[in-house]
Length: 133
Image 1: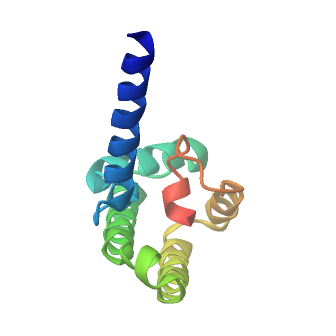
Image 2: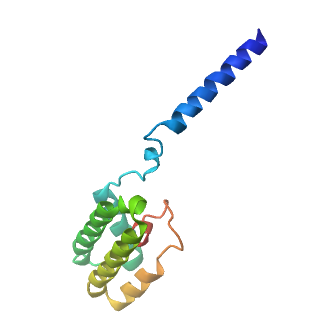
Image 3: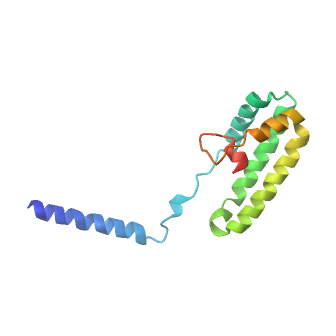
C-alpha cells in the first residue's frame, strides 16, 4: 500500500512538473514587477536630500526629473527581454539625459556627491539603484 501511494505521488508530481514546463506562457512570471513610479521617485528624492542637503527649490524640480526618468525606464522595460541591444542603447541615452538635467540643478559639490552615491551593482534595497541600473 505504501509503495502504491509513493508511486502515485511520484506520477502526479511528474505530470504537474511537465505541465508547468510545457505551458506556452511559462517564463512570463519572470518579468520584473511594475514599479510605483511616484513612490519610488519620492523615496529617491528623500534619500538624495539626506545626502546632498537639497534646497526647497531643488526638491520639486528633482522630483519631476526623477519621475520622468522612471516613467521612461518603465516604457523601455520590455526591450530588455526582446532586444537587449536596443534596450542598452536607449538606457544609455536616458542616463546621459538624466545627468544633463541634474548637472545644472545641483551645485558642483552636490553633483560630485551624487556621483559618489552610485551603487556598485543593482541592489533592490537601495532605491538609488533605479537611477543607475
